[in-house]
Image (cartoon, rainbow, N blue to C red; front, top):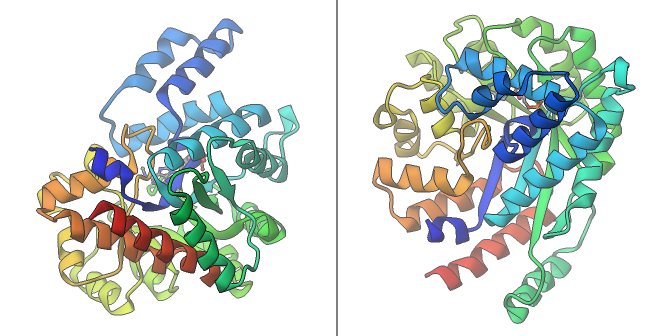
Length: 362
Ligand code: 6MZ
């Protein structure tokens, strides 16, 4: 496992509230239990349950949101989630979360996101770079050179960028509000929009106006696409030409052909797909077909907390299940640089970070 942890990695599909440590969820549940807001023994086994259907996963999210939705807790979980990814050498993290509004505690979508940003600022274990700024290429190369020269004495650095999620339960107006917020928060590391939530709920046309607006304004877009069979949706989603899609499981032959022609990168979440039984067995996972076709792919965790996984574990799993060696897995991770929603300066830094790791790991 150690090798998979020390390999630099890029995480592009991680939901904040799905990535919380079990220990934190249990602690939050205990506190709410003591206040009489919930019955701790009722929720304990729900949190600790291992395998869940996709439907059960969304029920769990409703519970998690009860436990986490106050500003202080949002800040805490953000800090912990980022530290956990950084501790396994994730050098670039795109974290996505659904901005939430809760009048009873004075929370607006904006104040929710401010609490997230507060969490990024609170990270102490590593240097977090989340504010986009123009650094020239020479600076970037110098910074890698310094990293190498100091060899371990310099603090580790992780880039973080944020995606705002539109939940499929939301109305068109609510979705547009999220896009407007993303535009306002561009200077604070928000780079794009994600469409997620229970795939059995809502319709593509409800979100299309908000997504079009986001696209026109130059925000990057990633869509959960084909997580359940839905013939009305996959085609229009591909026609929309998002910068990336997540999952891409239930595709008809023609849709898979269109995907391959379009070269839209796919965020692959192996453990999530297996645990929710969207895919019955790993050896029939579409990773193999797409990988063999040299389609752009990136391995991701989806919900590291909910599915008890980590990005290192996803790489190890793919290596074992598909018979790929460390060199191929390293290349796969490195190829992710091309699909990140960040500028050339960040890409340049990451190329340097992978080059320098390659020297040490080989
Ligand atoms: C679709 C998912 C998901 O946004 O509250 N989410 N949406 N498919 C999945 N596959 C398992 N996993 C998570 O994080 C939790 C939210 O992310 C979305 C759901 O909308 C969930 O409520 P945030 O931080």
